[in-house]
Structure formats: C-alpha cells, structure tokens
Length: 70
Image (cartoon, rainbow, N blue to C red; front, side, top):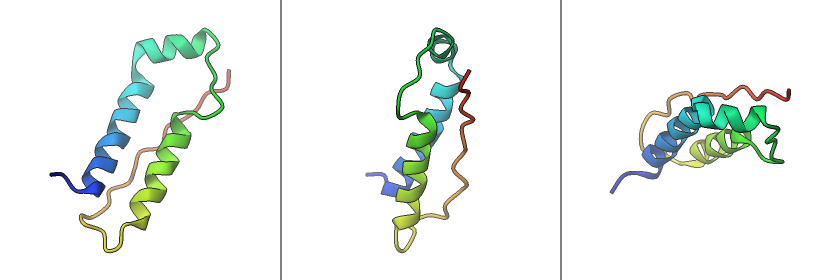
C-alpha cells in the first residue's frame, strides 16, 4: 500500500496533467469557471501534505497551477 504522502504527490501530478489537457483548456475557453478550481485542490493537497507528522517521505514542492480568469 502506498503511503499517504505518495498518494498526495501523485494526486498533485494528476491535477497538473488535467490543467494542461486540451479538453480541460477547451472547457475553460467555453466559459467553465467553477467556484473551486484546480488551484484550490492543489492548495488542499499542500496543506494535507504539511500535516503529516513525521513526513513519511521528503515532501517535494507541489506544483502550482496558474489559474486564468479570462
């Protein structure tokens, strides 16, 4: 079983892939602007990762997603 920290990091990487996906970008271009966005999800993962005591693995930087409000 993977550690919680590993799952959090994998989730962060998946969110980055979603953010870069052409279908997601197309939704944004069509006006999709949810109240909570991928950046909010990344922040939640970063907070969760910081709460692990002691950290089970060295915590790499969770990537930040730039949110465009066009």
